Figure 1 (cartoon, rainbow, N blue to C red):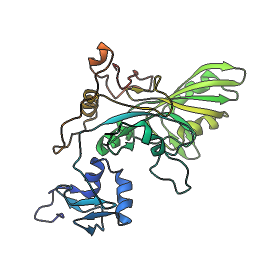
Figure 2 (figure 1 turned 135 degrees about the vertical axis):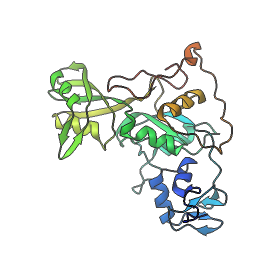
Figure 3 (figure 1 turned 90 degrees about the vertical axis):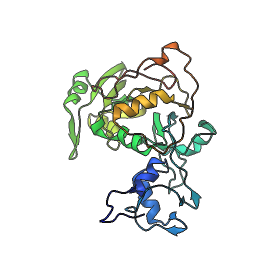
Figure 4 (figure 1 turned 45 degrees about the vertical axis):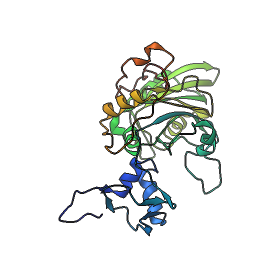
Length: 295
């Protein structure tokens, strides 16, 4: 079904429906459509502006697309050396190589929330819900991301504190950053940085602008979720009630045509039933929340 003057609001664009079903991001879906990989009743779709009321009859790479299921979120400890993408033209290994063994067998097709560079490790959120992914990524959501960087060079705490006003580098404006020196040995130090936007290579660019060499970069938290002691290359699922709290806080409406939410194992701690902390926070340190622990 396509849009028309008589029925201009019927259904939603195919790219939005497929993103909601966890196929890929809207941008990636538009690329898939341009490559002729998306079909409706056997006919190749030619435009991402196609409006449908359901995914009935839609295939991607000739595989039928199922109706979206309830949102699921996984915490993944991304190792260094993996590309945050489904495929890499240069043939480098991607996060999906590691996820084959890290995710449970019943895991849906998931998309990364934002990206971590090839040589950046740490917490990466994964979800099957395109609307939730977008809400978590938008700077307007004000969700803090915290990184720890091992650096070499001369730097003062005052220089780091000045980043709270933001900084402009090569014509690019970076918003306020809460940065602190963790510990120093000679000219080597660990620096912690919390920001609420995710510009490309932002942490590395800012630290290099300050004259520091970055030898290791680790993301330790994203919003209310914390890396904790999650092992490198491992993943764990966020309980459903925490996802429901997150959807409400972000104002993301759940689709009406989903199946029942999958039950996740109860948290080991009795405090796990505590209400979730607000997602929006000041650019200080967010309250840590592991998948199976209280926020």
